[in-house]
Amino acid sequence: MAGEEQATAGAARVREFDAAWPAPDGRTVLVARSRLLYLVRRLDGAMPVWREFRNEGPSVSRAAWSADGSTLALYLAEEKKIELWKNCQGDPRRVFTADLSQLGERVVSVAVAPEARVAFLATQGGDSGTLWILQEGFEPRMLLPLGKAGELQFADGVLYAADRGRNEVLRYSGWDTTPRVETLIAAGHGLADPVGFALLAEQKKLIVASAGTSELLVLNLRTGLPEPSVPLAGPPARLERLGPAPLFALDGGARQPPALLYDASARRLLALAE
Image (cartoon, rainbow, N blue to C red; front, top):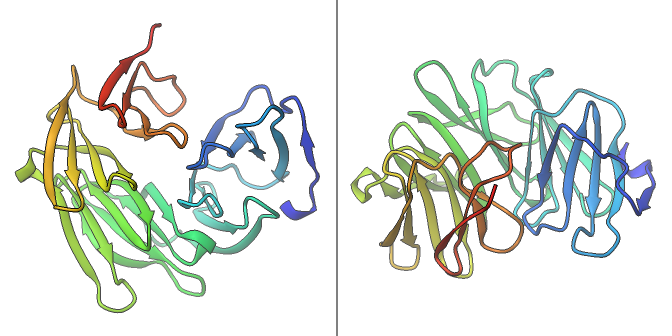
């Protein structure tokens, strides 16, 4: 178990790794090498702390942090399961495991609430996708059909979901009582194939990477009105936040260094030299 391992400060114990998933605050990252998992903390300090998270078990195909960095969802593709862990800034503890073997679709995106109270899953079949909810003690439950599964994010008790097939970003709440689904931005706003989106909490804005129109669309969440878009030279491949600052990678795969960044605070594009 993770709580039985010792933390080690100093030089990196893993110089090459298979994947890394940073927490939203940029101070902690989950690192995978083969079937080993490490939590690296205090990245903003002079001496990061490495802690063995798990020393055996199936490989992790995808990981998702809660917005506060306290909780992790680990997708184990070989096992067709998702593990939910909480207290990841202290002594991590597994809360529950969800069996996905009956879903029959490819996992595209995962989002999790703090304390693993609930998690969400977007999956893709041959012609359509599905939005699922995962809760302890229950089988995965379908919430919505999707045209084409896209990114998920959970913030302030609300789920945000991109549907790349229907060209929209949705806000979903009240799943346990009175479900409410709102379309925040859609094709009528000029959205085509949302490959990623970001929530800027302080500015109350939603930024969406529109691959079909090669631009970033900006929605004011206070007013519900669009703001001037940011044109791009070509279609973005993603909109991935890099640390706590409003800096986003727009191109390249998850394991490739980006060549183009977007600074949301200054509303400008930054091209990186090769």
